[in-house]
Image (cartoon, rainbow, N blue to C red; front, side):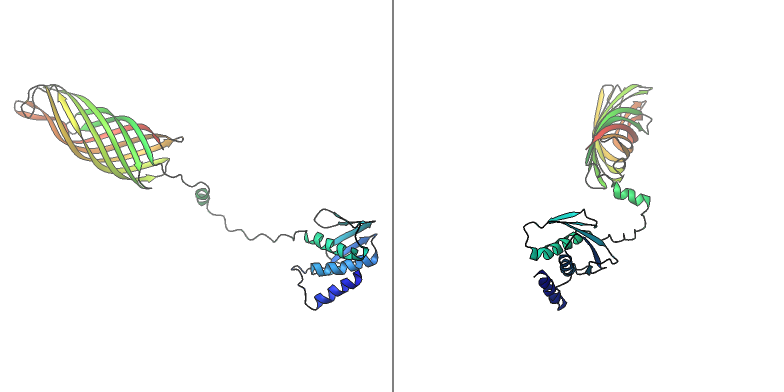
Length: 308
């Protein structure tokens, strides 16, 4: 019965009623040991149908599978997969060939096909391109605060020291807004006496940022507004002798800033600016005014801060 079934399957496939599996390659050799000849022959015919390739019991070129029979157990070995044992206990002897053929087909197909040769690798990109691909530049910090000291010099020859706190907000990758509050003081020696000046101002600027998050440069422009008081003047332009003179002002401001990030969030910044203070405080001597505060000025600052 098994022989007839095998012949019927082979004839049916020869007429085109079944599709052979895709790797019809070299013939497969079966080396049988201790197996009934008719069973192994029928199993080879059925396995050929299952695998879509010739299966021979005689030695032939190609992969070799050993089939060892011992009682009701059959051991398949020789493939890339570990040896497999098939138990035929309780199986109708008339279908032994069919069971063995299916086991051989499954065992052979469990062996993966040899890997295809790797495709040719593209030329290695330049080292700089690899670095950009592996370590993309960090997204710029959106917000940072800073505090530090300032030095301001006027064309009249007066100087003032102060402190300032500031806030930087990155509106986009290149656009940045900055805000600050500063207080400055100077003791100016004049022939008329000592002039103590106190200045308080707020700043608002809009600028462009360049560089990355670790090293940043900002060029900005805006305005500053505040109040200034001078004490100890023996005379002023408006004829006040002694006492204190107070004035409010607002003027243009341009600034260049460099900022470095140390570690994860700590920042260090240095900057310089140019401004114009439209309030003039002058000392009057013999009807002649000598300006001691106001007009064009330049400033410098050093600060530390924190970024988010």
